[in-house]
Length: 454
Image 1 (cartoon, rainbow, N blue to C red):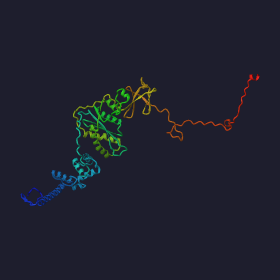
Image 2: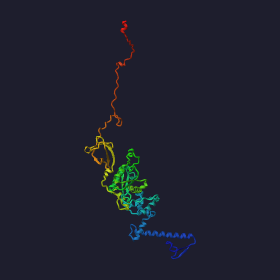
Image 3: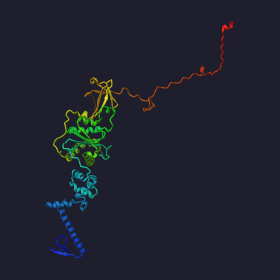
Image 4: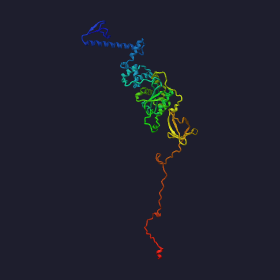
């Protein structure tokens, strides 16, 4: 066995250009360890020189010395320089541990650069966080189905869904829900926080999309009762061969938007995957800003978060044609309202929501008495009455009589007091009715004049 000179830079026992013979493996191991020690001495010496030339207090050197100096100052966190509080890696990881512990590497790198002025690549930070046990690489997901390709045009298909999540992480009184619409072709987004997932909340988000972009061709949502009637048809609907629709379904019909029900959550995967991004990024952004109420969260969405999503995560549509249609002739205030049918009484009043309303004389027209009017509860809180396409003037009728206050000692929730009970008649002590009963015999005498004469 022989080892040629020059094959190990730390081999001080070999002559230049010569070879050395070894008789046992132990001699080979000893020679290798001597070479390793030589490498270590060379490494430490070079590191000291480069830190002096490229460190914070150095005079600087050539371009390569600066690059190598930064490399020695910012290696992986296993080196001794990572434990130094003045080292860049130590400062980065100290900030991550203190404030961005549950952040992913990508978002943590963005926040470090944006808020702390510490710029580090996400892959370098990923390695540091994995070494500290702050990040576990995710297993690649096994593909179970082929993804549906995006629609070619913007506005051809819009997906809609609601996410229930701990958005405020318990800081507020109650956790809100996030209602979102996302375009299938471009991933352009409109979203808003609400106290609950209601018809009014979904109508408001639809109105924001329509005012901003126009009327899309189709809307893809789940089979929730907000979008679809999930009961058998009533007898009246069956006789009239009429299909029942929800308030949201009626609004889509009036706007000319096709409703496509999704068969599973995976079917509307684009909006579901976007919620994963929101549940990671948006929760932490709200935490960093100390937002714990719905008005403040919605203000942040409109000012910063939604523009950031549409700037960073949208893609160009395959077609340059915008499939949205304008709102010409469509009254969004009336369409995006909760509409109920009520019957007008003979005195031109109608009841709604436990209140009575009087139709004004100037709005009375033929067929109104006993007719059916449409009550519109609009999203701005106002109430409108519509009869045969014409809006009526009306006012609320005050209650006819105020409730009578309860008598002292009688609870207000008990039955109303009745008239006092009559006092029973009692005869006086010397009344004949109170005298004792005495049995007497009575004799009836019958005198026949004809018999006595004979």
